[in-house]
Amino acid sequence: MSSEQRWWNAVLARDAGRDGEFVFAVSSTGVYCRPSCPAKRPRRENVTFFHRPEEAERAGYRACLRCRPKAINGNAQAEMVKSICRYIEQRLDEPLTLQRLANAFHLSPFHLQRTFKAVLGITPRAYADSCRLTSLKRNLQAGHSVTRAMYDAGYSSSSRLYERTASQLGMTPDKYRRGAIAASIRYTCTDSLLGRMLVAATEKGICAIQFADSDDELNEGLKREFPFAARRRDDNAMQPWTQALLQQMGGQTLNSSLPLDIRATAFQRRVWSYLQSIPFGATRSYSQVAKAIGKPTASRAVARACATNPVAVAIPCHRVVRESGEMGGYRWGVERKQALLEMEQRSARQAES
Image (cartoon, rainbow, N blue to C red; front, side, top):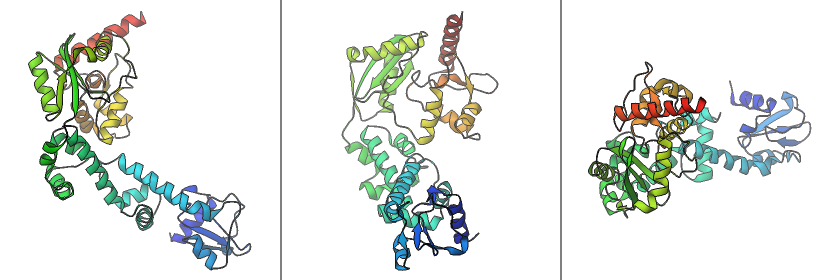
């Protein structure tokens, strides 16, 4: 199908998604319009297409007063590029080729690249690289390990990370992390129904919820998670959040306003958001979660997202089990997972009776 035929189909469909890509001029009226113009459709033989309003005006046509194609053209392009930016930002952990972007926005790769660069001055690929670098720097400054910061920012391998970022950072990621200002993290350790529990938070919200058999294990785990953060125990300040989590484990609904400060890839965020929607006392299989988030073949990736969940209970990864009903893995031990599920199911039955 030729470009003109695609454009004519867009005119017939009044496709607003093509606004800004081209204008069409009608010889019988001497007017040019944007594709979504609500006016009556002209005869095909009277229509000529132009990439830009200026081209139509040089050919002697005037802008339609109804759809105002010249006024909308710049705005439409800017809005389209803004949408492409949001699309890229949400998928930094996925391979985003120019063809994939073009398919997602129903444009030709050439037109998408040209429009994006005209508005922002860089290519979509350069924008994605910039977003990954920004995320990497933020995570390193927060005190995360290079490995965690790498995957959270959407880099697929350490060699790719060092290859892409060493020159941009002016040093290796590890050296950048060592020189970063340490994040301040408050934490507390307390008894729970699953043994000792650690709750840690930044100024923005809870960043870690862990279980272990002793405070030494918990402290070591927090140190591994945030190796360069300034960690300070503060039992009093953490008490309200700790109490809310203990109530959740005891059968009460977790306060949805409980603030979380966690960094995640777009995929992890989709998985974790879905986990928070699983009813108290219920379970889902890894494949059910994958289908629910629109990634039916990503069961293993769902399992990895569950395994990397930094805030136990607040994001209930324990509610995801194997297809057979077996527990599957759990970052804090399968016994704790089973005990937590049994407590939830018992509380749910009591609530129903």
